[in-house]
Image (cartoon, one colour):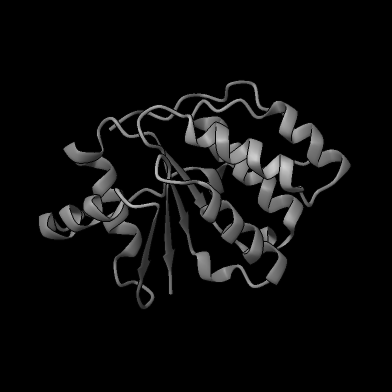
Length: 177
């Protein structure tokens, strides 16, 4: 599995971001080896969108983490974002998305500065963002954990626009209830 690069100089502006939301969760116990699920997960991440839905504590996050440790994911750049209620704000949602992609080595400073002027990005901004993400070598995977917490229609529409524009070179995994 590829290590997460340190920040490439992304300037989140005046808003502090929680590192905990941008880091992969760690397991306090031993993970159960589930090779068939990991294989299915890997196959699913070859498509633009993967949705893993289940009850609380069903193992959605665990299987994603197990896949990230697998041989199949070794050379794939993976960005992780754990959704919390603060991301129901469109400006914060996009700042966190920029921070996740910055960790994948995608240049984001100019896009962050544009968010200072308008926290709800327009067509050109979103096209630039998704093009840069799609150009990231290795077929990047964005894992959005606890996606069900997003409730605002404008934020859900933003996530939809992001997924719809990525094409086939980048992938989004939604872990949700």
